[in-house]
Amino acid sequence: MAHKRNDFLKEIRGLNDEELQQKLNELRSELIRLRTQVVTGTIKDTMAIRNIKKNIARIQTVLKEKRRAGKA
Image 1: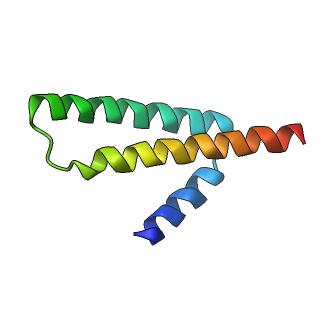
Image 2: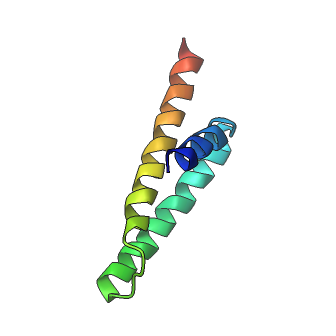
């Protein structure tokens, strides 16, 4: 499991700001879709919500790190 997280971090650290923002928007859309499934009772994998929320936080962290590095 930690292996997948490290791969995801390596992937997002290699992206530029535009690509990160696009990925962030995709994940937010997916989160909305999954929350809709929760309401309708059709969701199969409830852990997907947790994983997407964590990935959103990871992308936001990388964006913040890049912005701080640019100011330094």
